[in-house]
Image 1 (tube, rainbow, N blue to C red):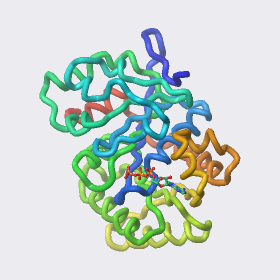
Image 2 (spheres, helix red, strand yellow):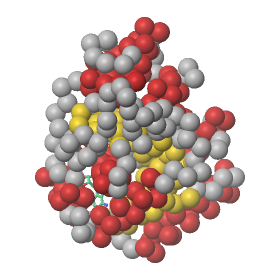
Image 3 (tube, rainbow, N blue to C red):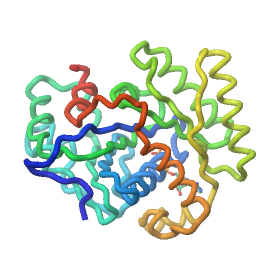
Length: 279
Ligand SMILES: Nc1ncnc2c1ncn2[C@@H]1O[C@H](COP(=O)(O)OP(=O)(O)OP(=O)(O)O)[C@@H](O)[C@H]1O
């Protein structure tokens, strides 16, 4: 059932926001957002997952969920945000974004109020995970700016690494992002040595040309079982909890769920206001 308490009388909590993004598409962002979220929920965190990929919103497809409403219905004033939160059987809740995600960056005052209306009913989450689109589009950058932490997913492929560097460069060029925690997550590795090599190479390039190191939060092995789980529309962590790749995902989730030293200042409302650029 739902991991997120709703309703008045609950203690107001600080919520830590985590953006999962990538330079190149198809590197496993959505798969990792779902499975990291499940791992955190199983670790006792209350997790809200936001599908921030307006082009190819497919978090719901990976979990075999057919959302009736999306952010678009909230922007148009047909629903409150609290009414479109979908409890999942995996212990976390989901908000479907779809085309409404593009609209979030261009809201008039009336539509902003539509989005913020009724927000107090959905407090109580420990962590908001946003699965963004790939690349350096305006929407992706907005999510990175609004979130406290960002994980950049790459695979060892040169094209993926080049695009990961591109996103780090774009993000660091924005003054507002200085001091934001950017972490690298290397997916589809064939060995620990390969993961270390990829992380070291990217770190050395960002240190040299952007004067900022890029910490690696972990790596996930290439695992055909992950592909099977996508075909089955059932998360890998649920289908194959004993796989080595599932263990790696749990380890990364534990590191990411540890919010010590992040200086959390967000609530869901604070995050959305930051996203709109109004606070
Ligand atoms: N560690 C892994 N081992 C094997 N296959 C993987 C792994 N991680 C992801 N994949 C596969 O990579 C494909 C793309 O994954 P996913 O859709 O999560 O990527 P994405 O970065 O979110 O893509 P998009 O940019 O389209 O949103 C999926 O078919 C998935 O099965």
